[in-house]
Amino acid sequence: MMISKKMQDALNSQLNKELFSSYLYLAMAAYFEEENLTGMARWMKLQSDEEHVHAMKFYDFIIRVGARVKLEKLEKPQEKWESPQSAFEAALEHEKFITKSINELLDLAVVEKDHATSTFLHWFVDEQVEEEATAAEIVENFKLVGESKSGLFMLDRELGRRGSVPQA
Ligand code: OFO
Image 1: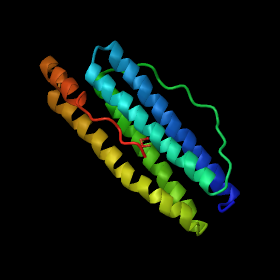
Image 2: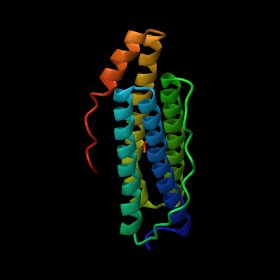
Image 3: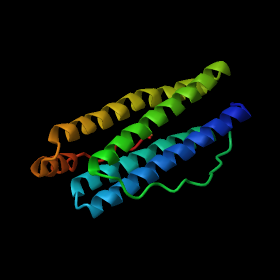
């Protein structure tokens, strides 16, 4: 294989994290369904799909470089959040964690002079900037809405307009 054993393990671990992201956002979607916030539920379901696309990019890359995909157990995601706002705050925190993880992977690729993996990871570096900015913007919108029921209703409608996820 073109990559080291250490890199293979790190890429498989990131594959697991992306699958967990998909699982976590699906749990958030189900929470929003329960709260009758169908626009937010739709947004989260699409986010879950997008994470699955991210996971598959790792899957395909691992195979392309002649390494072995190893699927591990998925952590059980949280089921409930204190409020819709806190679910989106948790999503933002999760994205920061994923950004850190992508950066560490890239650090490893640089140390190993693994140019193929470095180049592959650059797409994710850009993507994480987007992911964090989007989640941060939604959290800011919640802050503007505050306790207003009609504001929450409008935000739900707005988030429900999200377009579907382009496939990789
Ligand atoms: Fe895969 O970007 Fe979010 O987690």
